[in-house]
View 1 (tube, one colour):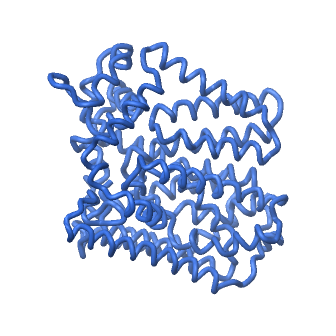
View 2 (cartoon, helix red, strand yellow; view 1 turned 180 degrees about the vertical axis):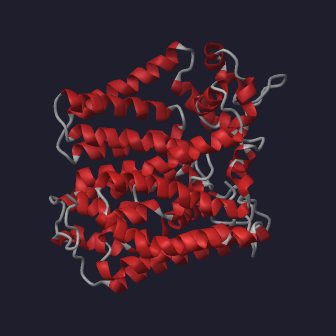
Length: 459
């Protein structure tokens, strides 16, 4: 039986603080607009931001997309989303909602991307900087892993990995090599993997929200998690693959804390293996550990962390036995970033603010506006309630993003780099008062359309 969701529990009945929501959204818009103007001024005065003119995100501004005939597809889909998705989120059975949210995120991402032409789905993966450029360089796995770090930095007489391969651990390239050796090579299959993995993160987030905050909270969050502007970078960037793997790792750990015994230990071990695998997709996913600790400790459990850590160590040991030591890879990749012309050109002061502005674009105005009612709920000491426990997700995600910005290793492109973190900010929209929810969802859809049709993201 579908639970009644027409009357949210008291913690979700935020005060009618429309002014607070509008002020928060206006502050976010001012941050984005200010960084856009500042970025254009810097480039006009000789600075190189390497954002293709789309600051604070990477993109190329143009009044019209290449495929005008396909514009009605996302526009009409956007109308359906605004009018029907909240009703579906209330009425559908839970499993149907989870499946629909994953399919909906993938469909919305694809519908937006194809306005740049159907080839736009695979095109971002075919450049000389991407993983597919190096697939044919990989032979036997053990020699590949043992010599991987030899080709990260430039050395005379030696080849150097493509930009994204050199900046990441070898796991991502191995994923695409594996596809190729299964007979699924090329940009089309690679794009399908990235989109499917990225979209699957939506049900993973909703399952986790339900565990911590209850089903009503998860259902209220569902439309905002599914149709956030962040889906623009699901179709297509390899970071969507990173998002999917890490999201299911967090979900498994959260689930293990709610299920003691062997079943819980099995989920914890699976979560640890997934998070261990995530470490070999991106060095930055180390910060997902903040979320992993948060979703377990908020349930007053420690055992899942111990069992999960064993899974992480097993993955680290497996790669080490094949010749790749993760810490060596991190050290060399960090040296490459600091010596690279893009990193050196980009002014640190600008990107401290521009990174947060890019995150603001990706999470959309509804998430920013939800800061007001969510903060009000915390002030009312809702921390011991299910809704209060769910606040740990955006809090931990924001802490991870703050550390990433402070590390000074990510300057720009964070709308995709931070995907595995910013998706956990989206459930905050569950706190929006009922009377304004459809309006804020419409704003989310409008921002996604505007960025795709006028900003043309570069990923």
